[in-house]
Amino acid sequence: MGDGPPPVTPPILVIAAPIQGLYGTTYSIFLLSPTGTFIKLIARFNRLSYTLAANGIGVCKLTLPPTFPLSFVQEDSRLLIWRQVPGGRKYLDGDAVWLIRDWEESINQQGKQEYTLLAYTASEILDRAIIAYSQGSTYGSKASAPLDNIIKALVRENLGSLATDTTRNISTYLVVEADLSLGPSAPKTAPWRKLLPTLRELAQTADD
Image 1 (cartoon, one colour):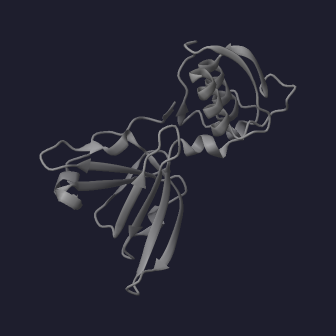
Image 2 (cartoon, helix red, strand yellow):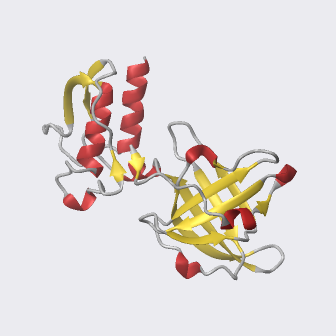
């Protein structure tokens, strides 16, 4: 699965305006629209913290000064964090695309206004969805099949082109690769359950 087109190599303006971190590490942060259009290079920030999680949801908090134009931010705007250690190449840290889900205005300990953006890795999209089908349906109860195929089918049926509720179809931005039948076979029944925990269970079953 992917979150639309892969991020492109940063333009030259990033090299002109890196942000210095610990031990000489530099960061260049891009703000993109929800559809991936470049909006702004974030040239200043107060604090940045982020954690990546294998098979989980990464969390990023970016705190900005009050001069930042908050009107540029929408729900699901994207952040790209490019990192460079001294003597190394610039790279997209974790190959992660961060989706902004919330933001707030606050006053820091120095009595100054600031904005904090809260963003998650694209896997959070899977956690928003539920398997919105009854137990008796073929969408809510899966006969024995390769588990990697079942995982992909559940995503297509709840977030992709096979969703019976077309308002949940985000296949314009979410791509699911073709079935490869590489996993062991087993059935799965998961009506009205959250999607991401169900996918984790299927992965664990295959590993077991």
